[in-house]
Amino acid sequence: MKNVLFLINPISGIGKQKTVELIVEKEFDHDNLDYEIKYTEYKGHAHELAKEAIGKFNVVVAVGGDGTVNEVGSALINSSTALAIIPTGSGNGLARYLDIPLRINRAIQVINLMHLKKIDTLNVNGQVSLNVAGIGFDAFISHRFAEITERGPLAYMKMIPKEFANYESMTYTINIDGERYKLPAFLISFANSSQWGNDVHIAPQAKIDDGLIDVCIIKEFPKYTAPALLISLLDQSIDQRPYDVVTRAKHIIIESKEEMLGHLDGEPINLGNKAEIKIKPLSLKVITPPDNFRRNALLEPLKPLKDLLPPLPPLPNLPQMPKGFLGNNKDK
Image (cartoon, rainbow, N blue to C red; front, side, top):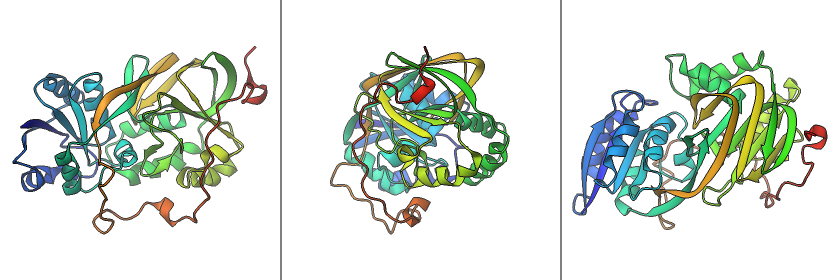
């Protein structure tokens, strides 16, 4: 019998987590698996409980949003205990990338199958990101979002145009695998998977097990082109815009004269004047759907907005960054 610990964030996202206990009792494979359920009581509690579970449980299930998933997963790095996810948050970026169903009963069925996959993780100034970390406008929004009580994707989307109008890009010195550049940037993302959440893709070709970080630099751009930027995030063409650069690296150092606001999987963090980002290849075990597991589209939530857009041809393989890819921004 394998042991599974469910860690439920009672205030996460949009409230689905309130029905988890009933659905676990109904859908769980009681013949082959034992389980316990614990509720988190404060920020960081999921990390503490997951750390204590190493060696006692085969799997720890994060029931919540991207923040809860980060807390649990960061505690399990380089351990024998695997992370599983029941996504009940607003964005659910890592769960969506890993094709974990958004319906609780189907997510539990995935856990029953115990199919393991190893994924990379990111280290940002000594802290962990499982999905996407960043500096710039998205980090600024995550800090502002943490200050309000309203939750959910609608509250998040309402904030963006209000803050966008007055946001000013910062100038950064960027060292990407030894090549230095200096430029103003709207945001810089460090992507382990392809998306922030809600199928908004910042690094369309990112792979979570390739030992590389997809670095997306959105350079300063005319604000009237913002609608085109939004569309490119939804239709996965961000790396085809003239104002954006996506490349791959193993080690990035970002410096700025101003204090940098950052985020780790959507959770705000203060980075000071210097941020160092490294990749930790295949450092976390995760329960994912096996290849023959197919979600029933009729049971899943409504299709995301990107599915309403006209189809695009497949993107070509992303080439490695040529020297001088940022034009005249190379730092002498």
